[in-house]
Image 1 (tube, helix red, strand yellow):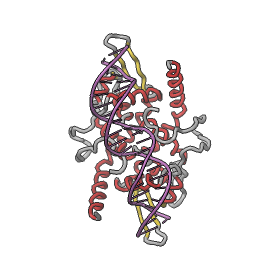
Image 2 (image 1 turned 120 degrees about the horizontal axis):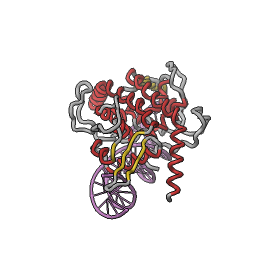
Image 3 (image 1 turned 90 degrees about the horizontal axis):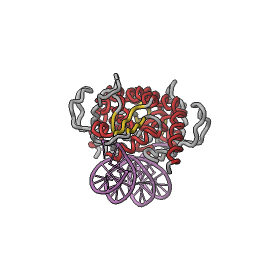
Image 4 (image 1 turned 180 degrees about the vertical axis):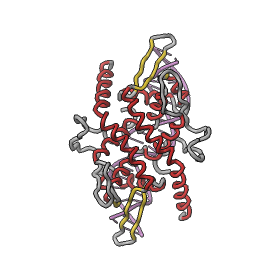
Length: 157
Length: 157
DNA sequence: CGGCATCCTAACAGATACTG
DNA sequence: CAGTATCTGTTAGGATGCCG
C-alpha cells in the first residue's frame, strides 16, 4: 500500500451504498439525548474511506493545485513548496490509482508529463471547498479556544 | 502536542481569513490551461488547518458519533469498537482543546462524564457529511479504478 | 525533466497494566 | 467508571542520490 493504510482495508465493495453489515470498522450511533436527523451509522464507513483516500497530508492540496488546471510534475513541485519529491510522487500515484488524477506522458526529449483532475477528482472539489470554507470561517474561533485551553491547562501545572 | 502535529504548526493567527503572506505552507495555484473559478490559493492553508484539526484517524468518527447526542466515555468506546481507549482519550482531549467538544464531569460515585458537541463542533457536521456523501456516491467507482490500476500494474510485473 | 530506491527519524497507534 | 502510564511496533514522511 502507498499512503493511508489507516484502518484495516475495508473488506468488500458492495453494490450501491447500502453496505450490508460488513463486520468492518463501524460506528454504532448512539441514541441518547440529543436529536440528530442527518448522521447515519453508515456515514462512519464512508468517512473512513475518504480519509483513507484523501485524508493524508498532501492529497487534498494536490487536488487543489490541479483545480487550477493541468500541471507538470515540476509545476506541482514548485506550487507546493513544502512537499518533498518523494511525497509528491507517492501522492500522485496514489491519486492516479484511485482515478482522481490523470497522468499523460509525452514522448519527447526532454520528457514532459502532465497531470490533470479526472471528472471523479473534480467532483471532490466541492466537498473539499466546503471544508476549506468551514476552516476559513472558524479558524479564529478555534485558535481562541485552543489558547484558552492551553492557558487554563498551564495554570494547573 | 497531541495528535496531528502534521505540518509545521501554522505560525501565526492573523485577523480574519486574509492571511497575509505568512511564509508558511502555501500552494501557489498554477494558472495554466484549465479554468477554475472557485479554488483560491488561500484554500490550501485552510485545508492544512482542518486536516490538522480533524484529519487524523478518529476525530471525524467521534464527531459523527456525538452527532447523535451526548454520550459517556464508555458509550463512545462501544460505539466505535475499533478505537482503543488510549486513542479515544487522546482524540477527545484534542477535540475538547479545539472547542469542538464539551466535557462535563459529574461528581458522583461512580463517576460520570458526558461528552457533547459544541456549536462549533456541530457546525462542522455538514462539511463532514458532504465528504461522506461523496464517498457514498463514488466509492464503487473508486474501487473499480483501483482494481483496474492494480491489474494493469500486475501485468507489467 | 521526471521520477524511483534507499536510509532514517518522529509520530501514530495498539496492548497491557495500573489508579482515583 | 473514566481514565492515565508505559512499553512497543509500525509507518508516514523527509533527505539524498541515482537513473532513463
